[in-house]
Length: 205
Ligand code: SF4
Image (tube, rainbow, N blue to C red; front, side, top):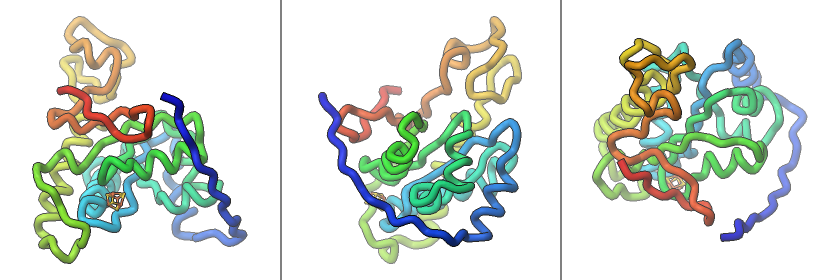
C-alpha cells in the first residue's frame, strides 16, 4: 500500500528552553543513551504512556535512557532532536494506535526507526479520554506495569551470557536466538510494527 503524507509548516523559534537544552547536553553521552519518547498524554491512555516514559528514564533506568521532550524534539532542531538522532535505539511509548510520537519524529528524522510500545495493550481496560475519570493510583499501577516491561524487555533484557544489551554483540551458545538478532518482544504483544497505513499492528507473542 502506498503511504500518504501531509506536510506541516513549523514556525521557527529563536529562543531556547534552558532547562530542556541543559538536560539534553548533560545526557548526550558517549555511547548514546537509549532515547525514550512518548505520546503527549492528553487523554487517560496517553497519561499512562507519558508516566511510563518518565518512570523508565527518571527512575528505573536512569543510566541507560534519556527522556525526550516530544514537543521540543519535533518543533526545533536543537539538543532534544539530537538526542533522538544520535541514539542507537529509540523507544516510543505510545498511548494508542495513532502512534503520535513515532510518526511525528519520523517526520523530522525520516531515517528514524523507533521501537514502538503500545502502552494501551499492556493493561486490559478501555480507558476513557478524561484523566479526571481515573484515580491517580490506577495511573501509577498501569504506568509501572508498562515501564517495568519496557525496561525488562527493551532496556535490560537478561540472557544466559549475562549481557544486558538488547541484542548481544558477542552471542554465545547460551544466548537465546532472539538475543542474537533482535530485542525480545514483550509478553503482552505490545511491541508494535508499523503497517503501511501508519496504524500499529500487533506482533504475535
Ligand atoms: S488519543 Fe491517542 S494520541 Fe491522543 S492523547 Fe490519547 S493516547 Fe495520545
